[in-house]
Length: 263
Image (tube, rainbow, N blue to C red; front, side, top):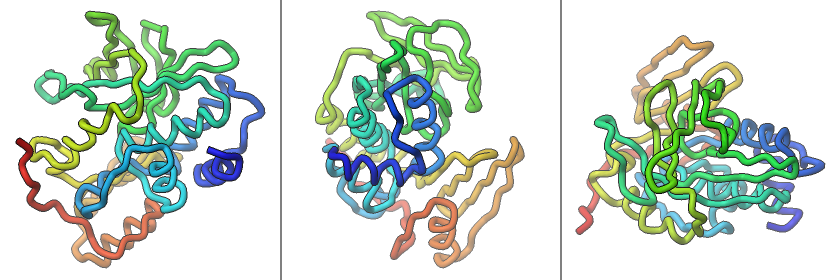
């Protein structure tokens, strides 16, 4: 990313260019990103291609003013952080399902970020409901965050479990990866009927006092812990909600359709 692209990305998330890649700068960028760019899987249901290159991801997030899921959001955020002088490592993770079983390899993309202060952080702006601030990578005790109480727990073979409010969320393999390594995982989640991304629609963003989520035609607004649910009834209402709450302008309402089964 050149200076012009970096400045455009910073404007997109409403953040000033940090004077140095410090711990505090990372915290501010992380939270600003969550509050400006939604977690969404609309491309899956609009028939849009997902290209895992830094250039394509930044163009989608910044120029097209869209969001994305983990590969897209954390991939783009990694490009921004790298341009600002942070030391960024891409890591693959497997997300636990409701039965406690981990998903496929390269199920999720998370970031390990080093700062000029010597900080070592787990950054993740692409999981949906997760920590609002980076988590200390080397800390094994509880870490309080607006998104919950988190712990990083040592697992077999040097892996780490991310636990939130006592529930295992995902399992990290900390070995460095490249963005292209996640192509198979992105393809699976974009095409496979077993992926929750092909079976549901979601668009969600952190707000100053909670979160707003649009799942299909169900709009859920959480303010200071209190949930308000509204059922939208027309395409016009849905499109207006995407624009009002997430800044996303669509020509048609996305809908969950049949997905070709993968071998």
